[in-house]
Image 1: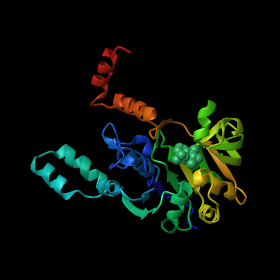
Image 2 (image 1 turned 180 degrees about the vertical axis):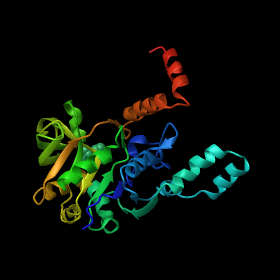
Image 3 (image 1 turned 135 degrees about the horizontal axis):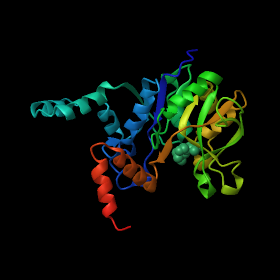
Image 4 (image 1 turned 120 degrees about the vertical axis):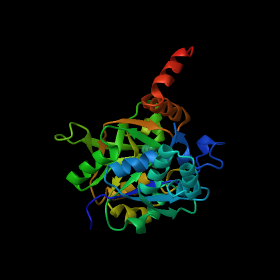
Length: 293
Ligand code: G1P
């Protein structure tokens, strides 16, 4: 078994109903934060973490994602003719960035099912899963931090964050104990996991965030897991089965997570990313100050 984490799976077959009508014809993964589609942030994080083999699980209506990472001859020719060297470089860099394999998930049957669709392309090696909705702004890419934990432990690693109050019901939740030592209380040994519990049933306030390093045993587990919450095959339920065979760790990453799958989260991320931009930040900050809030 290749023990090096070099493949990253992006489940991207979801319908994006929370952003209708924008997502009627546009994949939600293509919604831009300032001027870059959400999924490109995730792909760049994977590359910066040493995962150069990208697998995107798509579905009907998602062709714009494939076009985005492909060469666009007409656009490149037009930019070349008009002498727009800077834009040409941006457009070329996207298609040159990475090789991507696509697999279709024919029906939206859950996150666990989406991951299972990547089984043949991943093969018998540990791999990453990135949920592109969760954008993590970090000095060291979140996935890179998690791969370091995987390299030390050899076990699956789930990104976690404390979520207070009833909002915990929107997440997979860990029952876990802190591992003392090296990671300064940021590493947890998972005892159990529950997908979207009622607030009173949540075993802790440690929520699973959309970054996973998984051992290939997860595929066997998912293949024999029954449908769970919402009549879908849940990744969290597959992980519960995996726990019977292998240790799993939760890891509190360093960095700021933006939930761009939520309208308010999307707006907050847009404002924060725009403020950080060299070309926009100053003017945008001035503009925001003029608003009567
Ligand atoms: C999925 C997972 C959930 C996890 C969340 C992180 O839920 O099922 O366990 O906590 O992603 O964003 P979704 O947000 O797709 O409903």
